[in-house]
Length: 266
Ligand SMILES: [Zn+2]
Image (cartoon, rainbow, N blue to C red; front, side, top):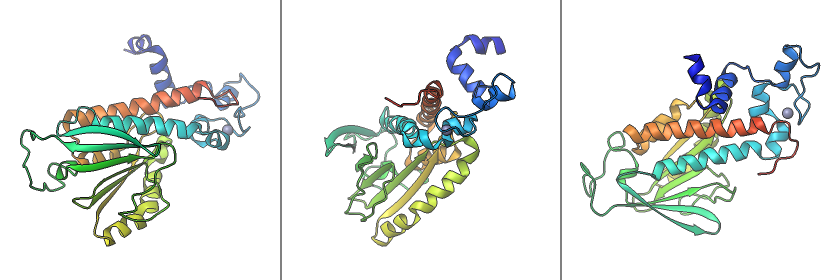
């Protein structure tokens, strides 16, 4: 079994297993193994553990390395929401360098779809309850929260809204060290609670979904719940979750490979 794993996609599997069991040659491990006398991170000279290299280094953060990984996972999540979605058709347009995507319900109506009738959230999910969804993604730190809903400086990673049915969904993604997923969830929920309240006061039905995809590719339950609430279920939900895990893990693998390069160019 172990032999098979090692020969299959060797780079990927080695990174995944070794990162989970902390067996990668990090500066901290190299010192522990007696191979090096120093255990400093090549960028900031703090103790170079794997969690430091992948999520905790201030220099890496400042250089935009973690943001790059975050955006790779974010791009992947947007793709998963739309690709293959049966009842929802995607048409994209560029506007002021923002990435806009409209969700337009197909005219024919899907199997089992009740036309003109709002489905309860726990049934079909949020997305099938409207046909005029607009999706905005904060990829270049340029998202401006739709002023028709609320005026705020906050920039959730994804905002999906339907003006006709006055519904707004905010999604905030974090790619943390797996042990800190709950903490990230709480922090993000807190950050957006006032904005959600403001939306509600303005008679918008509002949801905020903080979601965490661990940096080694373990997806939090919050992702699963968010997809279900939106109405993305079954095979699509499984695929979306798997894709997010792979996006996070492969981006982290790239950060790992570049750990000793002091400049970050992508
Ligand atoms: Zn560092």
